[in-house]
Length: 157
Image (cartoon, rainbow, N blue to C red; front, top):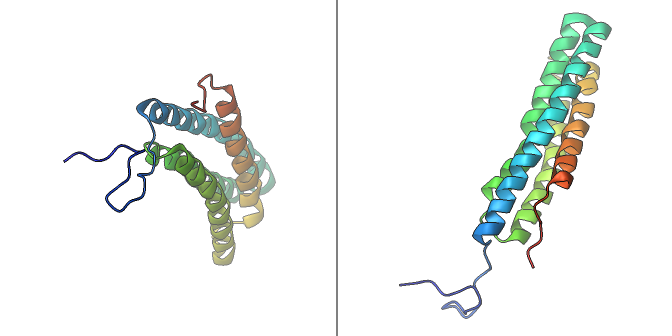
């Protein structure tokens, strides 16, 4: 038995939700790869600078705090492009919604992790924030710049 076309009604009477075409799926996968790479490069550069600054301000414990902050940012911020990859075959509006929700979730998760680190007293949160904030901004900026530089059309007509 074959499934009805997206424009044809389902047995329940409603139309099937549209799914992404193979070309759109390929564009989404390409965009997520480019965005992840752009974000990672920017984040690594800023993380290294933050670790050096933390080392000058607070010595070895400062470097450890800066590295912890940077690793947390890279792990959490990488979720956005990965969510795009996981939803690439879905309708483009679903991919966009998932990307927007993951952006809000990233900020929330970063806040929770930062508060937990501060509550546990494992690292100096002032130094971790020195790495966490700018590294997150660099990752997001790198994603945006990488996406803007793509030559692939992002809206199929």
